[in-house]
Length: 507
Picture 1 (cartoon, rainbow, N blue to C red):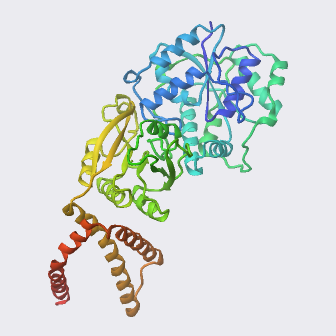
Picture 2 (picture 1 turned 180 degrees about the vertical axis):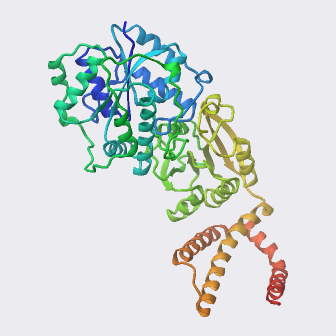
């Protein structure tokens, strides 16, 4: 029996057509296939079990197809699902083929399970077309789509530099494209049914073609490295050591773009503040749309660029939610920023509000075995400590995946002493804008350069937000008491300030 064929590529469209031609015109086996959809009426020609197994492996490393790992240790992962697919595919009649864009990053797992010798074929589509397809189908911003495409092309280049790699250019015109696939089939020593090929391939179904003719250095290098030997050799996966880091850094390794991960959080979300609670779901800028409604919940989806902007977004939209769900929001933020996030939520949510967000699992062996590191945030113990200090009680932590957990918090009624720092933060925000305006008046009088209008406007916005927050707090007895306690000290503060000012003005 000939060695299996792995069809590699950046995105589904091109690899789907090539896999479909090898299946229909060459008779290769492919297992139980994913059914066609409106987006791809020709079919995906991906084995459902293989796709699910690949998704599971990436999830164990806290990744998906948008942020694949450069390297990983397959022995640290649970390979049960993939092992089952290896056994199923070995029983298929004749030559079998596998197609999934994720596979080029997961070849070590196949090798670890004893599938050493395979034949590799690549499909390359112009980057502008692939980027457009990702933007349209996956709702991913252009710059992020560009980084993803370059990462996949870079992995193909790395493979092409080590072995003779046939690269089929897609889409091309009908005749030239079919000629390419026919030549590759011959090099794979496969039969070819021209009538079946002509009947299968419909060039009009090729979608998401970009009007841009832009290419990329990585794409050009791949075409330069491409080779079509008379016979495509079987290569030993154990000897194919791949470790390329993306040249363009991927946006995140916390898969905030992946709606499926957000849905996992909703499965463990149970808010008890109200019979029909008002819940705000925080979406990072560029996140894929998820479910816009949840049974028994009045849902508001709020898009922000940083956790520091959540409270302002609530104020702007007139929200005071009973619950908050946030996915991937704390990634790559410092403890001080996380502290501000919790404090600002305390000020702008219901008195008994509950908060659900995700944190990395420091014991996730799959997560710890891959490179580059997938997370860069304080660990759960540190986050819980910050939350407790800012008025949030820890209720529970639930495992979502081998690499992540959901932490559930509930607001605690703060004592007057605890409230003073919160009020101080608000007053400090008001003070900043007054300082800036005074500085502006001074510099105008002196004829020197003034701060930019953007900086001034930013400070004014922050002051407006602080005033709104303060107005919400003023009717609480504990706040009135905290402010009253601070009044006797105000003359002292003024005296110290005057003394410092006098000292600084002395020669």
